Length: 182
Image (tube, rainbow, N blue to C red):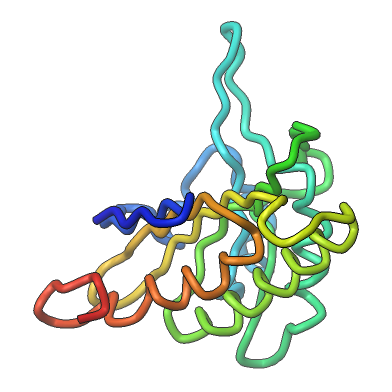
């Protein structure tokens, strides 16, 4: 399902991506499974193919975003990244778009993750000395739930992301399949 308004694009779709499927990916550091496997918010890389080169990369702000998430870590909220230091590749784009690292999160801790995204984007707006609506954001969140996994994609103003994402997730896992919050 896609919603579009005021330069915001929100797409919600079913996905086969799960924590278990991430653990089986080539990029996943199998030797760290016992540690990373405890996470209920896991940052995952994007697969990039260009000029006959295939690699897994993270957006340039990934370490900062992970830091925000780790500041909120608790017994209930356990963030991590699906990479070790040797395999961490950063893609720098230097644009007026903040690409938040793609992550998979359990539906139970989704509200915490959305708050972290909002706080991170607010600080990015301040850091880049941007006015309301001047800094754009790209966000991909995979929500793992017993009723099925969903991928939420957002592109739009960074300062509108929190409200747009909160609206998008309302009723996302209702039993009648209605994903638009009605």
